[in-house]
Length: 271
Image (cartoon, rainbow, N blue to C red; front, side, top):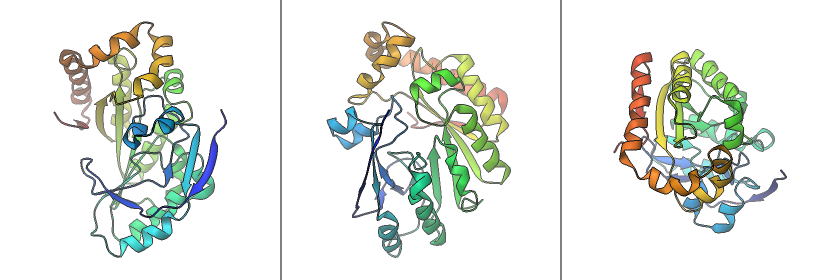
């Protein structure tokens, strides 16, 4: 698949965040080459073209480091989520190093940094990401390489993501796994959940879990994978996703596996 790359200029670098534990968010890129079929980031941008072409374009915010340097002189320190609507370590970052420049600035100015990624490129910045001011979160929806390839076609494979957690945890950096989205009849089996929890146990990582967010355009982008894996699931999914018994069952399986293995565990959005 070809990806269209371009550069844009941004007026601001830090945005207020309503996500739990974050005061700000920082996104060095618009668009994400990983092309995860379940991603609802395009829905938050409310642009149909962006939603339909997610994974096919990346716009780099070429001046984000310079803008951030100016903003940090005026902002009250707090935890910055890097990133919330794109992967900060998608392939273009290897060349441009926008994320690296930004986290260096944040660290120098005393801002805590919470990184979330699906890429082992984050290991490049081990010299910057140190215990105390940083935490590294890695999304792992499944340890099944084939399934991960269908859901997250251009992200690092699951084993490589687990290696990220192992290396940072060994260095004393706080680590966590985002087990999400959990998609009914796709990655919600007890076996799938337990394999991810076992990675959390091995790497001394906290585990955060969440269900699929069926925002606008998400089901349409997911349809080819759902139809291939579970014919007929697309038609059933809206009602299945609204069934509280179904989510209670999944939540119970996650919590039970974590309790059995001694893993710290919490839902992304407590209800």
